[in-house]
Length: 290
Ligand SMILES: O=C(O)CCC(=O)C(=O)O
Ligand SMILES: [Fe+2]
Image (cartoon, rainbow, N blue to C red; front, side, top):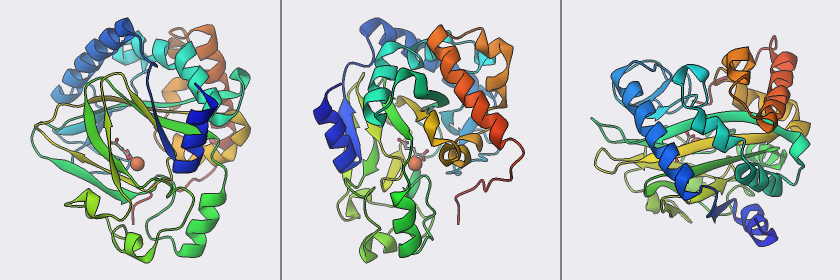
């Protein structure tokens, strides 16, 4: 990945890249995604994002917009961890984070899929700053260094995500604030000032700062199979803990999981386990809602 891509990412808060999945990985990941999605819709895999609920805890329900914990050994799909800990993804993460292989921290890997029964949408939000934050709080939070990258890799064409380029650097304008101060999903995301729709062709990835102002719409009629993951720079310590550990990653400490990982995967897992040990008994504020 080139320096220009990193510059685009730093300036605009997102960047689209190609080439993180080879054709054979694409086929394997899509087959694994389809199996995992079928299991989740049938209720046999219960770690799901449920239609109607934007943030964890997602609760239970029978229409889903996501499959949680793609690398969980009980899901039985080793292609996910193989790809996540592979050279292409690690290399891109290092470039965007400005770090080395021995800083990378394993984090979340989920799958975003289309609902079957009801269309759904996420309201405009930043992942790690409440919509109700006042301007000073928003400005202060935006200045905190992230130590993480998040991305969507589309296995089928995907136009679900909308972002406001550059908004990871500034508090919302009054107009943007007015359109993001509640939890009501937008009827027209492009009515948000500065918003663009992100379209990914199969195999393309968008990396985005998780505090960019973003929302998403999900249609029952538009098949979606998108890998949704993040990776940290372990030097960030506590800055990653709240956002990451709220998803319940205890299973990542287990030997059954470790056995599925490559050497590089195990090294990333070690750094995650260390963060869990440090923050295990600390009260963390979980939900961003409200
Ligand atoms: O569906 C997407 O691409 C975005 C999901 C998202 O913003 C979130 O889960 O916070
Ligand atoms: Fe989000």
